[in-house]
Length: 120
Ligand code: 5GP
Image 1 (cartoon, helix red, strand yellow):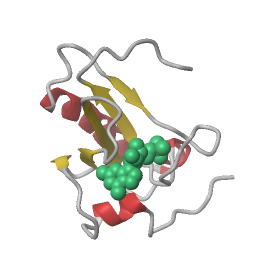
Image 2: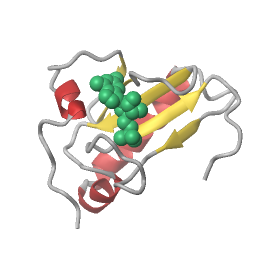
Image 3: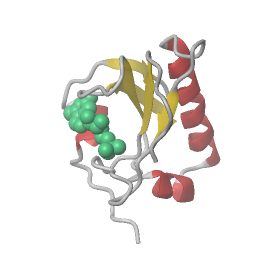
Image 4: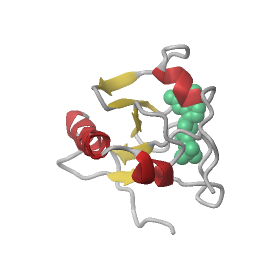
């Protein structure tokens, strides 16, 4: 089963403003900020304000309004950052074998260079 939500995870602290981040967007449902260890010229993380461990938790437990608001924010952030014209990648890691490190659901946005084929 899914682990319980850990209120002390790093993104919970960023949401509460306890740890600084370079925010690029915030609205009712989502907050977006630059990744501290960028893997592309633009590497931003978009997270829901709600306390969800992963995509599995978000998909199962978030309201339709939260899901719609969150994904709309992902698209808006990409557009606001100027990624839409040339394209970008949106990715989420889920759980141990998915390589998820921070247990608050987040979508990575990568752009600003040719990303090549996705592996795997
Ligand atoms: P995951 O592997 O969980 O999908 O990705 C976690 C991401 O969070 C990594 O890309 C990592 O660089 C980023 N990250 C970890 N700690 C911090 C932090 O304190 N601030 C920011 N802005 N990003 C972080």
